[in-house]
Length: 184
Length: 184
Image 1 (tube, rainbow over the protein chains, first blue to last red):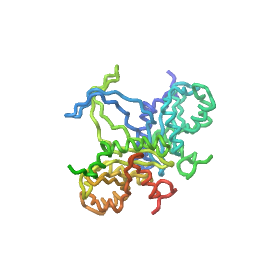
Image 2 (cartoon, rainbow over the protein chains, first blue to last red; image 1 turned 45 degrees about the horizontal axis):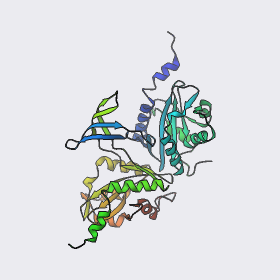
Image 3 (cartoon, chains in turn red, blue; image 1 turned 90 degrees about the horizontal axis):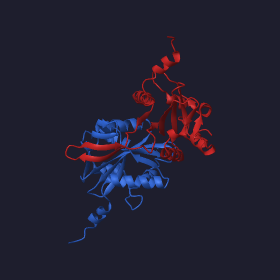
């Protein structure tokens, strides 16, 4: 069997995008680079034993915000992680309408908001800033974002050993975090 | 029976400090003043039915961060709400050691971090900034913060109909939110 280096590399990526981001955030916290957490998943509790505080009937609820938020250099950061096996585009059905509304709100409040999109079949990870996402949706009626748009507008994230998925460095290259006002 | 105006006023305050903050945050969101949410309570799931996604055994976990966070004018805000019936001091046992460590981290990353402390027997609510809290703890070996310290260092929050507990206005009076660098 011929060694497929692409598959070997992919194997190093660990289990999921979420896992990669969690260990990256842990690295950022331990090395005083950024303070970013995954929000707990909201749960709808239907039955609770008040004596023992044991929850005996509950369901996961949909997060209407994005999954991760935190602070670096005083600035508010919020993002979500999305993964697609698709090679040519990112289906917008991956983004919940509530999340789109939330992204608009974070932009209004001058927060730094983005998606980390993994094209798992291409071994490529990108940051797509909230305004570029909203721009695309406003201009296009397409149900997916072509890879070319993300490749052009997005910020590639280097995948390495540690920090695993260094999105803060990627943001820094765009001077998103360390200037007082974002460049137009 | 003589009418006790103090008690009548307290009656208007609604159920709890948490409730007052939640409806304040809703007002802020609806009026584009700030985007601040209560984080979901983390839950440790012990048993989950994967077919129905029903959680049948779970427990609440302690939040190691603070309960509320969000953004205004691009700045990261995080805070917690604490209530005491005590009239002369705020017992530090109300603050979990993990939360104190977290407050120090948010200060390091230049976030705006504070507690909202309600002296429920006095009908008084204050913002105490993270650095004033840490300063007190570093200098004193006391197990509680005297009311006088909070009254002097804290920012009083006006309690009114809407927004119920206007902590953003209180922060603005201190020029915490709208200047590029905080005053020394």
